[in-house]
Image (cartoon, rainbow, N blue to C red):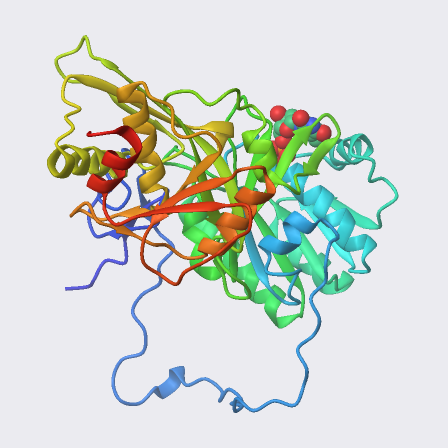
Length: 456
Ligand code: TYD
Ligand code: MG
């Protein structure tokens, strides 16, 4: 029986299936699985390649005498750091994010700066007319930058142009608008997006150019999301932020040329994105006098310490099933902390609504936030503020033991710089002294509850 080449792919997370279903097991989204016509039939069969024989590719060994070409810095430090210290020549980068978050703004500013640093740069917009991009450039004060613009969605025309122009950097905004005539489906579909990204990245690598692809995060099944092309590129950056907040965070989730988890912090202003060089001061700026339920967490994002305020509210619940609501942190991690507090320390949260918020629109994924979350929950529940001028960090294990995390010294130094005088942290690890900071170390959560909130 002839094998069918039809597969089904989730347009949000790129999981593939042999059968259609309504809900994707990979990411849990509904109605995102679509038929994928892009796959060709099986590869060569038998021992000999026969008529399908290709030419021999040239092999090299690992030894090299050539120095790697230097990275180009844009001069936007927050962007350069997330890239791992500047743009690596011949690299492929994906910048994902919700529509309207500021991707085009960031990349136009980046393109202008890279062009000013001497890279021949082409910015291809599939969404806006060149006149619109020029208007934006005028608003951002970038009209003098030597960036070449094009408004085009036909991939074949774009590749021909790139072949003639030979730029060093090309920006494609966005990959979902690109249309390749070799694939028989609508722009934005999984097979079009995958094929366009593949053609662009391989063309760029062969011709010694760097390519930056913009990808909108979508919830619609018919439009493929950026995760579909994550595996094809060297670096994956996500641009995040909460609506209603000015802050935007550029986060590296994959980087073949630098550390992942690095963040760059920006502020959206009337004249484009401005760098935020001291995010801790910014995230704490809205903080009033220390109150019950508010805790300052000394966190680390990539190579940089960042202090953020965690806020908790615990109130008697009018519902039979109490609410657990989290903004900026992982909901299942909150459930775990509540369970540990309940079963190891005997502090029940049954019948109580629990709200947890990371101030400033920041998202935290570090396990070292556990102790700060527990402190905020306890402080809100007992209506007792934490000792003044103290920061908190540490991971909690299911047994209730506290585990020291990485970069303790960096966290303490950052806290000291911002005027904090004390830190509550797990014991263990190597002893660390930072002048002006008193360190209170605890072995487990029971000791923490006893020491900070009295008997518990
Ligand atoms: P944009 O870069 O078009 O978002 P994306 O490409 O991710 O869809 O940014 C759109 C938002 O940014 C829009 O709501 C207006 C706002 N904005 C500013 O606040 N200031 C500015 O200088 C610019 C250019 C945009
Ligand atoms: Mg855009």
